[in-house]
Length: 311
Image 1 (cartoon, helix red, strand yellow):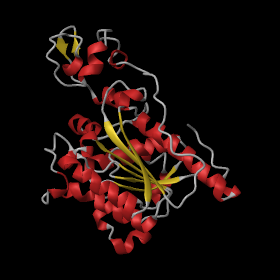
Image 2: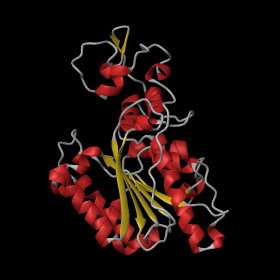
Image 3: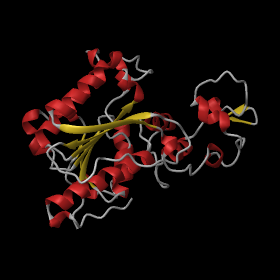
Image 4: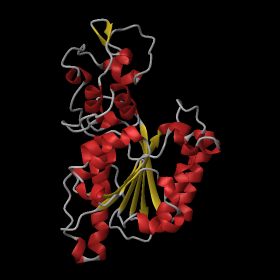
């Protein structure tokens, strides 16, 4: 049976990979430069995607792939996934963006552009911080949008998405950008996935030790609220005592599967979780993307109708 193939750029610890693997897709190329994140990625995904590692398709620096050898180094694929570096556009990164010459991370989008231009994937799926929309008075996002739509010829859909809208007990608002090649024909426009009910609260994740009243928690979004109420978990209070989240609890908040292990120190594990994506939100969007690809496949040829989705 044919399966959709995807690549996982700026892969982190594999949030995109786990989500799309659950949907039955195959990862044919991945890239991550951080040595500690690479260790975690391979430790947890080598058994799920052995071909990726056996074929040496787990790249350690996407900048090593020049425009001249993209076709040689990256196999053909259907979906490009990239949670490209967000620090230059985030509040924590002082909103530096494309203009920060000393920080190459802000220019990684242009590497994505080069890969899209060379490989022409059917779909692109990008994730970044919500502040990207307004960075530099909107000029940064306007540049990205113009490149994807006008230069590369993709039909774009974008939305601010909260992890809590897809069953996870945290806000974590992120900008999701989905693009489809304009030359492909589809029966219907792309539809954003429906919201999903909360599966677990922070009380569940912390073993039932938290106060059950969660109203304030959903509003403050992890920041100090000034309400002076212990039900505000900006510091995760249990009976008035601050509690530091463990990496195990962080994994549950992000939707990673049971059995996921960190072969690194706890400080590194928490850093990696802070840079990761919300798996359940990615999976919901991945299902919506692949559902639409199936619509195009039914128009193109009967041979591709056999693609089965596991949403």
